Image 1: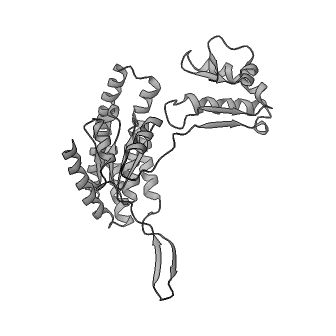
Image 2: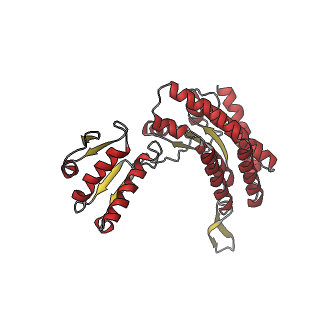
Image 3: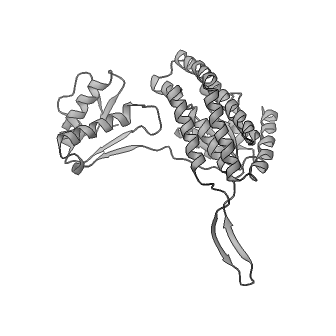
Length: 319
């Protein structure tokens, strides 16, 4: 395990030295070739993803989490769009952020440079594999991708396409590497690779982030677990059509893709609109979700405002 990762670490470090010398035009050309390679290899990527999805369902994974794992043509198109967005962005490297002249005449400048070799430890969404690889490449960083074992086949196919694209586009293919063993022990090897990894980013649930923060001997860029809120302001829902629109937004934010990280967890309703919103919201939830797929966890005021709770809607008290 360690010997294999050591080889990857060395390769990433050597590749980053080369990547740091590429200008924006060279990096953008390579990323455009990555987008083309993913488009060309979409059938192989979708085939690999189907294997991951099938295994997840056999293992009894909830459908909301299977949805996080699932790729289709529309989502592949979205991945390609995201690459093109990064291509259009300014190069973050080489920017002079500040500067001054020392009394002895020496010019001193603060200039943006690549971090070096980054590692990201993340969960099952395979589109994250592309996002992280492309953003890191644009920033002149090599990246080690350690995704979830549940998406391993998908990630292997995606990284194969990324590397082919970088090669075809005159880029540095060795600047992107994937941990392919699926063994959890490799996480702790990464966290202790002080000679090779310049920063590690945990992207996932609270337990994952805490494990990385508490065990890493390399610098950590800590991301928040988050609690996505949606607030309903009385001045926005003065008419029935505005109230209907607010309810549609709430439902979309929760049930369109409940497994993604920006699905709402908390609905905050102003007291002046509570009695109008909650009964209709409860009815809409009951009509939109089969029982058991969504539930409302209410404080006493919001539960009282619902009044007669629909029989096919689970409403629980806030714990």
